[in-house]
Image (cartoon, rainbow, N blue to C red; front, side, top):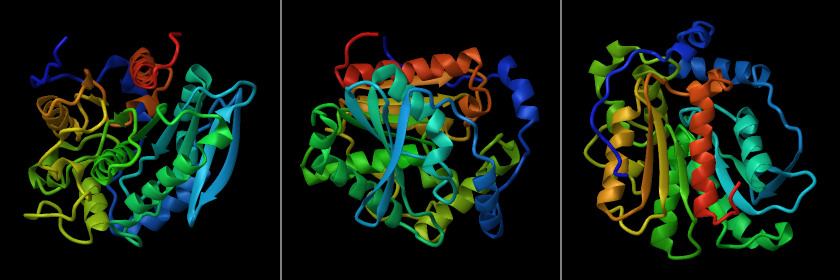
Length: 315
């Protein structure tokens, strides 16, 4: 079935109305980043980690958080980048999602502690993700894993880093990911330059926060005529040859338009791309309502894509 990129207008999904009432409306500014990082250490979501073994390693100066099956041989690998607008977050905040990949698919999930802006602007975060990829390639034998069964992915800003890493790895010509899993991805700095979007007050991540994230990462104003290579994945002119992709986003997400555009451009470039658009869903909806049916369906789409691109046995 062809992806449908027609605009869809929708109200907030009924399953998200109550969970959203418990989420404070916050616009992130540079002065608030240190405060939010401190709060983040004490507000990590509780995750079901049954059947999952967690350890930490280093790849040069880059720390890695490794989740693997506790009592089974792993089937494949996912290199994961956490969200946080390039300015916040740690791998532990996404243990819940990553644990599902481990339990359901038998994957080893390697999550990267990449450096955050504004203290560490581009290319620090992408370099850290690249170091993690190289470490993984050099250590596949330790986990008993096959080079052909390695995917990369991330959520929000982490998905944008995964898209940039896919582009960089393609140009380098070495081992390539089997797929790229892009969950409500932060792909295009030009969205942050559209001040008319500030008035829409998108839940969870609005365009004021988006401006802070991109300007911190780029070290200057977003939306200028040119940006450094690989800094903004949506700016790449030629998307041919990239790995198969899955892109998922809600219709009330600030990143809806740029996700649609990137998915369409991938298809036009001959890249297999599954596009999952969730009516009435906001940014990070599966994190605030993980037990909602739309969140479970959203996760099932990710699992199905990983199972297919890594050539794993059917469930």
